[in-house]
Amino acid sequence: MKNINRFIGTLALAIALVASAASVSAQQYGSGQYGTGPYSTGSYGQQPTQPEQRILVDKQVATPGSATGSAGETAGVYRDNLPLSYERYQPGQEVVFRIIVRNISNVTVQNVVVRDTIPSYAEPMVGPGIYDAATRTVTYTISQLQPNEENVQYVKMKIFAQSRLPANETIIRQVNTVEARLGTEQDIDTAQYFIEKQVVGVSKVPDTGPELGLAFLALQGIGLTVGLKLRQHRVNSRLQF
Image (cartoon, rainbow, N blue to C red; front, side):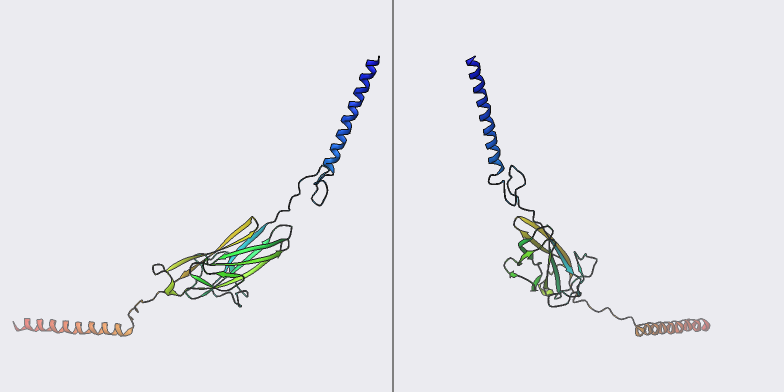
């Protein structure tokens, strides 16, 4: 009987110890380092997660002669691309680009770095940031963008004179590339336009005015008169026989 009572007592003690350990374990994981704070999502605690930050960049080019203002920010007609069939730029003209960076996340983003690569046959005139002639890039930073907010910048460039354009090309395709970066998040866009060189050294086509027509008629008249005289001479010769 004593052995039975001793066994029951030992079993009850073991059960009590297991229950106490389980209670301590639950308390430790429920109120530990990640169990409280603004990023806690459960009673057992989870690693904090940063909200998603996303940006979008859009590059547009103005139609020839449409953009006005110091940087082309007024009255411009901007398109994503100007196809070959559209109006083309001429050597020495100014071409204006519009860069739109938009925060498409629901959190505020900071320090968005924008890098704009200048086309091969143009030089920047007016725009934001710093121009690096060695890499032919314009770089600027947007300090902050609220959710769904956008930042708009204009870059005016001047196309090279005809003497600096390729001699073996009459129509030249140009592409302007822009990159917006936020940490590891990146977006790239391009805008296309064409340059059409002026044709030089073509001789003037001779006129075909009334003077030439009158001269041609005069020659016809002379030929007809000579023909009639020769014919009359042959008739007279026959009459003599």
